[in-house]
Image 1 (cartoon, one colour):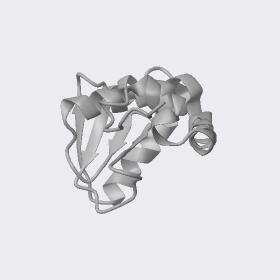
Image 2 (cartoon, one colour):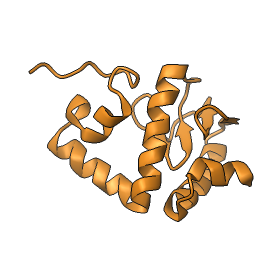
Image 3 (tube, one colour):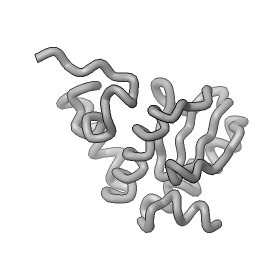
Length: 123
């Protein structure tokens, strides 16, 4: 339970999202481990239930494949964003993605485009 609190980064909304994401990961057959350096759970081997190459929900990264250190660093920033914005984060992210998709999304820029596998936008 202490790892859940650490992964949620002190945010009640992120704690709730983390607990729900861990249950979701179990339902999709994930291998779950806690990564101390990123301070988040990594749920790999999932059959589905995530977007793109993987999705951060609270302090949990959901994916089919095990992430490398750069991607995990990127996802840890998303976990920080969940802690900062709480349960409003998914809506804020989706609105931003609609206005500025992919590498122009300010949440992705903050998380580090290259670490997340994005090509910086051409200006």
